[in-house]
Amino acid sequence: MIFANIVLNTFSRGGPIMWPLLLVALVAIVTVLERIFWWSMVRLRRQESKVSEVYSLLKNGQIEEAAKLARTSKDPVMKMIGWGLSHHETSLQNALQVAAGFELKQAGRGLAVLDTVVTLGPLLGLLGTVTGIMNAFHFVGNEELAAVKVSGGIAEALIATATGLALAIFALIPFNYFGRKLANLQFDLETSATNVELLLQSRGREIHFASPATHYSEVSPATR
Image (cartoon, rainbow, N blue to C red):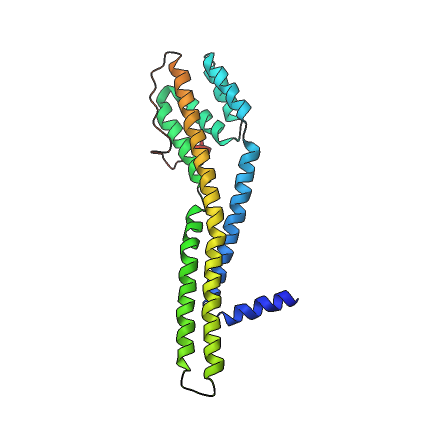
């Protein structure tokens, strides 16, 4: 109860800029929680042993069996392989690009929001600093109100600045973490796509595959 009163008192002393800061903070928290849940599900769905099994089937020329095994998995890498193998006779390159692009887009969702929060938080805090100082100087010269109002304006400026910086720090850590997770997934997709290309080439098929991270369509393979 005491802690809640302190928080509410500090919030009210921070001035009107605390409301947009609160809104930005809520957006950041929701985004971080959603990304934590999404990446946790991806970690549970990863099936590296199944990927190796698909490679073995491709090495033996069992393309349809490999495609069927990959399509039954929810692993992002397996889904990309399954989508590509299902269209290997028409355009393996485009199929892998579409599937990899879809997975990368899903993995990168929310990063733009966190990046915006990292930038917007300190700017809103700076705006609160300026308005707080302006409010403080507005009462300079009035001997009866000067001491109270000036100190209140300075407190408003400092609280807004601290809140904005804290918000940026809070968003920066998960932004970098999720960005690294995205880079790792991209590497896995590229590596698996290259392995599929080499394995099919070893069976006498001339297939040229471009990196899935370079160009991709936003068409979801989920529509197959």
